[in-house]
Length: 103
Image (cartoon, rainbow, N blue to C red):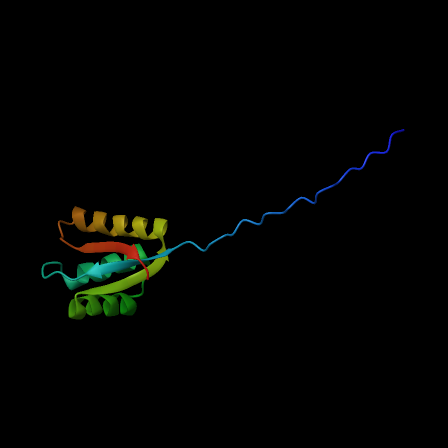
């Protein structure tokens, strides 16, 4: 039997680096036409907020022009914005929600 030198190389194990998904914030923008009661209703129905929390978020948007409603992943943020905007559109209200990346 001939002598054969076999050099074995160890296999390198590559661990994929898993990054946390980028978070998005859903913003409620103030307008002068949508009734406060309707805004709090949308916040309670779509974002499952309590009466008190939805009122505070609505008043923050009223005083400062906009308010952060929730911070979540992009898919959830876009879905919530669409649900809220659809409710407002069906009711004929100019209520505006947007989603933007959190910094």
